[in-house]
Length: 174
Image 1: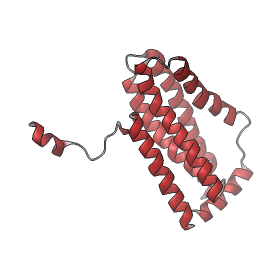
Image 2: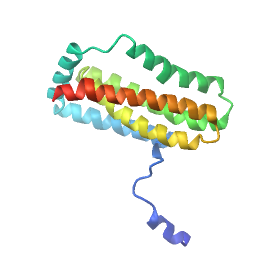
Image 3: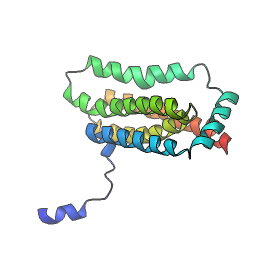
């Protein structure tokens, strides 16, 4: 294929997008703006009210938040901090941490503006993005078994989160 034609053969969607820091930051900002815009129209208000009721009837187990804080946030951050001079590791962990920061920022803004029930929607959306991202990052970490193991742990952790949101939140709203 000639270089002039190579641009025409590129897929419309790059499946590795969330494994790059700038693209991950952009996806987080677009998600924040889209969710705030949707909440601002009021279209999500009935869903938010039902989610608040479901959350009251089915609270999270006591272990849930500490587990996700420790394994999903602090562990990757600590690895990144301890290995800050390892450029290959930074290239792999930075997109994960950027998406995590984007989720936290989006949840805070949306919960303050539109109610705590929408935290479930933010969590679900970002968890889906994170699962896709972790699949891509595991492939990129093929020559780094320790990092690949960390991403596998994170993949299992966030898959459990996605299942929990679907089974204990979204299906109960319907």
